[in-house]
Length: 162
Image 1 (cartoon, rainbow, N blue to C red):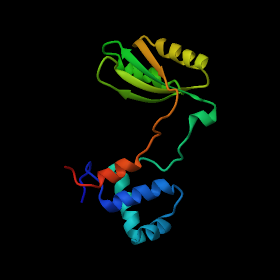
Image 2: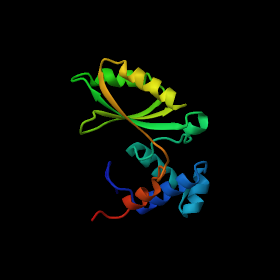
Image 3: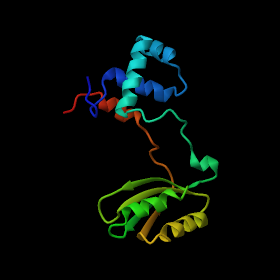
Image 4: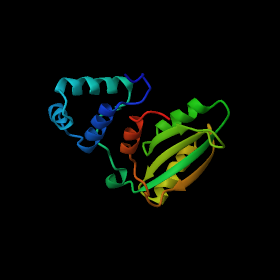
Protein backbone atom coordinates (compact mmCIF):
# COMPACT_ATOMS: atom_id res chain seq x y z
CA UNK A 1 0.00 0.00 0.00
CA UNK A 2 1.43 3.44 -0.93
CA UNK A 3 2.37 5.81 1.85
CA UNK A 4 0.46 9.07 2.34
CA UNK A 5 2.79 10.87 -0.04
CA UNK A 6 4.18 7.89 -1.90
CA UNK A 7 3.71 6.53 -5.38
CA UNK A 8 0.52 5.22 -6.86
CA UNK A 9 0.21 1.55 -7.76
CA UNK A 10 -0.60 0.26 -11.26
CA UNK A 11 -4.37 0.12 -10.61
CA UNK A 12 -4.38 3.68 -9.24
CA UNK A 13 -2.43 4.73 -12.33
CA UNK A 14 -4.92 3.09 -14.71
CA UNK A 15 -7.78 4.60 -12.72
CA UNK A 16 -6.35 8.13 -12.90
CA UNK A 17 -5.47 7.92 -16.59
CA UNK A 18 -8.96 6.64 -17.40
CA UNK A 19 -10.61 9.36 -15.31
CA UNK A 20 -8.52 11.99 -17.14
CA UNK A 21 -9.45 10.54 -20.53
CA UNK A 22 -13.16 10.33 -19.60
CA UNK A 23 -13.80 13.13 -17.05
CA UNK A 24 -17.58 12.60 -16.99
CA UNK A 25 -17.42 8.85 -16.48
CA UNK A 26 -19.43 7.26 -13.68
CA UNK A 27 -17.93 4.85 -11.17
CA UNK A 28 -19.82 1.86 -12.57
CA UNK A 29 -18.55 2.46 -16.10
CA UNK A 30 -15.06 3.15 -14.75
CA UNK A 31 -15.11 -0.17 -12.90
CA UNK A 32 -16.26 -1.95 -16.08
CA UNK A 33 -13.48 -0.35 -18.17
CA UNK A 34 -10.85 -1.31 -15.58
CA UNK A 35 -12.23 -4.81 -15.01
CA UNK A 36 -12.64 -4.38 -11.24
CA UNK A 37 -15.56 -4.15 -8.82
CA UNK A 38 -17.37 -0.84 -8.40
CA UNK A 39 -16.61 -0.93 -4.66
CA UNK A 40 -12.91 -1.21 -5.46
CA UNK A 41 -13.10 1.86 -7.69
CA UNK A 42 -15.01 3.81 -5.04
CA UNK A 43 -12.51 2.87 -2.34
CA UNK A 44 -9.55 3.78 -4.57
CA UNK A 45 -11.06 7.14 -5.54
CA UNK A 46 -11.83 7.92 -1.90
CA UNK A 47 -8.25 7.09 -0.87
CA UNK A 48 -6.79 9.17 -3.72
CA UNK A 49 -8.92 12.11 -2.63
CA UNK A 50 -7.91 11.66 1.03
CA UNK A 51 -4.21 11.54 0.03
CA UNK A 52 -4.61 14.71 -2.02
CA UNK A 53 -3.72 12.99 -5.30
CA UNK A 54 -7.12 13.94 -6.74
CA UNK A 55 -7.59 17.63 -6.07
CA UNK A 56 -10.94 18.34 -7.71
CA UNK A 57 -13.50 17.20 -10.25
CA UNK A 58 -14.13 20.60 -11.79
CA UNK A 59 -13.88 21.38 -15.47
CA UNK A 60 -10.60 22.66 -16.90
CA UNK A 61 -11.16 26.29 -17.87
CA UNK A 62 -9.29 27.86 -20.80
CA UNK A 63 -8.81 31.59 -20.04
CA UNK A 64 -8.09 32.42 -23.71
CA UNK A 65 -11.55 31.16 -24.64
CA UNK A 66 -13.07 33.51 -22.02
CA UNK A 67 -11.42 36.59 -23.52
CA UNK A 68 -7.98 36.41 -21.85
CA UNK A 69 -5.63 35.37 -24.71
CA UNK A 70 -2.45 36.79 -23.15
CA UNK A 71 -0.53 34.49 -20.78
CA UNK A 72 2.43 35.89 -18.87
CA UNK A 73 4.73 34.80 -16.10
CA UNK A 74 5.57 37.62 -13.72
CA UNK A 75 8.33 37.21 -11.16
CA UNK A 76 8.27 39.50 -8.13
CA UNK A 77 10.87 40.64 -5.68
CA UNK A 78 9.24 41.34 -2.32
CA UNK A 79 10.29 43.78 0.39
CA UNK A 80 11.92 41.97 3.31
CA UNK A 81 9.33 40.64 5.78
CA UNK A 82 6.32 41.62 3.65
CA UNK A 83 5.51 38.33 1.94
CA UNK A 84 2.06 37.94 3.55
CA UNK A 85 1.13 41.50 2.56
CA UNK A 86 2.28 40.87 -1.02
CA UNK A 87 0.30 37.64 -1.27
CA UNK A 88 -2.85 39.38 0.00
CA UNK A 89 -2.40 42.07 -2.66
CA UNK A 90 -1.97 39.43 -5.37
CA UNK A 91 -5.09 37.56 -4.23
CA UNK A 92 -7.12 40.69 -4.97
CA UNK A 93 -6.18 40.61 -8.68
CA UNK A 94 -8.46 38.13 -10.50
CA UNK A 95 -6.16 37.86 -13.53
CA UNK A 96 -3.46 36.32 -11.33
CA UNK A 97 -4.41 32.68 -11.51
CA UNK A 98 -1.44 31.09 -9.70
CA UNK A 99 1.37 32.24 -7.42
CA UNK A 100 4.37 30.19 -6.34
CA UNK A 101 7.07 30.96 -3.80
CA UNK A 102 10.43 30.49 -5.50
CA UNK A 103 14.14 30.37 -4.81
CA UNK A 104 16.65 32.53 -6.65
CA UNK A 105 16.38 36.25 -7.38
CA UNK A 106 12.58 36.31 -7.46
CA UNK A 107 10.50 35.62 -4.37
CA UNK A 108 7.24 34.83 -6.16
CA UNK A 109 6.29 33.64 -9.63
CA UNK A 110 2.81 34.52 -10.88
CA UNK A 111 0.86 33.06 -13.77
CA UNK A 112 -1.17 35.95 -15.17
CA UNK A 113 -3.77 36.17 -17.93
CA UNK A 114 -4.84 39.37 -19.67
CA UNK A 115 -7.22 40.60 -22.35
CA UNK A 116 -4.43 42.47 -24.18
CA UNK A 117 -0.89 43.72 -23.66
CA UNK A 118 -2.34 47.04 -22.48
CA UNK A 119 -4.44 45.11 -19.95
CA UNK A 120 -1.32 43.21 -18.84
CA UNK A 121 0.47 46.51 -18.30
CA UNK A 122 -2.41 47.68 -16.08
CA UNK A 123 -2.36 44.42 -14.11
CA UNK A 124 1.38 44.81 -13.49
CA UNK A 125 0.81 48.41 -12.40
CA UNK A 126 -1.75 47.17 -9.85
CA UNK A 127 0.78 44.65 -8.57
CA UNK A 128 3.46 47.33 -8.30
CA UNK A 129 1.05 49.59 -6.39
CA UNK A 130 1.56 47.34 -3.37
CA UNK A 131 4.38 48.69 -1.19
CA UNK A 132 5.32 45.06 -0.50
CA UNK A 133 6.39 44.56 -4.14
CA UNK A 134 9.78 46.00 -5.02
CA UNK A 135 10.21 44.86 -8.61
CA UNK A 136 8.61 42.72 -11.32
CA UNK A 137 9.96 40.95 -14.37
CA UNK A 138 7.48 39.80 -17.01
CA UNK A 139 7.71 37.14 -19.70
CA UNK A 140 4.85 36.80 -22.18
CA UNK A 141 4.16 33.30 -23.49
CA UNK A 142 4.05 33.33 -27.30
CA UNK A 143 2.89 29.74 -27.78
CA UNK A 144 2.36 26.49 -25.93
CA UNK A 145 4.99 23.94 -26.89
CA UNK A 146 3.98 21.23 -24.40
CA UNK A 147 0.50 21.72 -22.94
CA UNK A 148 -0.27 20.78 -19.35
CA UNK A 149 -0.05 17.04 -19.13
CA UNK A 150 -0.15 14.68 -16.20
CA UNK A 151 -0.71 11.25 -17.74
CA UNK A 152 3.03 10.50 -18.32
CA UNK A 153 3.73 11.37 -14.68
CA UNK A 154 0.85 9.17 -13.48
CA UNK A 155 2.26 6.24 -15.41
CA UNK A 156 5.82 6.93 -14.15
CA UNK A 157 4.61 7.19 -10.53
CA UNK A 158 3.31 3.63 -10.58
CA UNK A 159 6.72 2.22 -11.52
CA UNK A 160 9.21 1.29 -8.79
CA UNK A 161 11.74 4.01 -7.92
CA UNK A 162 15.30 3.31 -9.10
